[in-house]
Length: 60
Image (cartoon, rainbow, N blue to C red; front, side):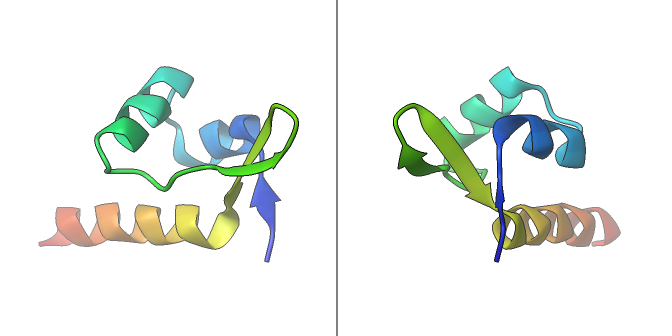
């Protein structure tokens, strides 16, 4: 299990920061996990699952 920071999530998904936070607000993207202070992380497995869902939708 690995936490990704925002920069890593942006690099992995190709989404912008604002798009990630908008999709979180819409319930379409995994929520971040507070790591302490102002630090937030995302589980790498949840990000990969989200990416696989997008691929599955594309492939119908």
